[in-house]
Length: 366
View 1 (tube, rainbow, N blue to C red):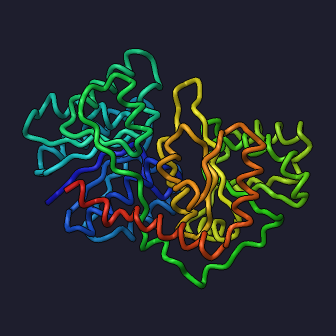
View 2: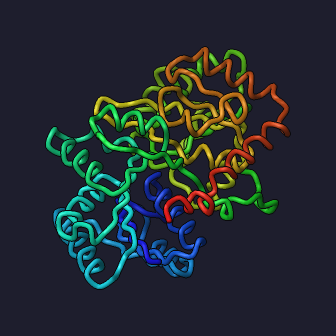
């Protein structure tokens, strides 16, 4: 079997949609499927990208399209049409908003000759003007299968007016890449407890909600330290907030990290925090792969209710779900996790993450 994945992004750079596509691709290859990927890979330097491509799993082929304004879209369309004309793909998987639109184009051109599977992460549904939102819904309704990455995303998809059967296949990780490795050393990070968020600094990821709670947390834990890993998109906004609350000395922004340093970051934390929230522009948290990455490292998570994090966290077992902007709730959750048996908690986290192994999840795609 030969599948084509059309994704808006792909590693080695950061990004949840890209990591989702990559782990899914490897899971399909593990299950005997040849996979070609058309994507953009421009969140890393050329040397890092070339090194990544040289070490791809056998059976996985990546066609990287450089972003270059309008030419990016023309190049992507041209490449995909060429691949579809010269290969027989049993299934074409679409992930990312523009990829969904390409799927609609392919159905118009090839009809029943192709089978498309559209993934919806959440943010695609409400972002853009009315015409673009209509185009996204049309794309989802036209695909042969529509899959949401969480029950929350499914509910949002249905509310948006997508009128069809919507399946749920939760986000997952490549367990083999996160197996407990005794050679990975913790980083020399300061603070107790050490709180960690992994994700681009944006309103959606909710780093500001943790910072807003730090003055209260410091009353009980004066040495608390908040570590932030990810693209520094909105770094100045949260630093300004920290300065206004006089907690700037309790925060360290580490920026983007490579895979090995990211594993060390997780191992260094006491609690993972992701207090995501929906933005006015319609950007929402569809699942939160970083939660599973923390869990496979034995670290519990605190996440926000009314987001896809409700599917990522087994409340009371692998972490706690709270209201995103409630400092009292966050402090209570921290207290609860710090006073839970760490051995049992770490065991629960790892077992939960292992249930989300793409080698198993990918079977539902075949």
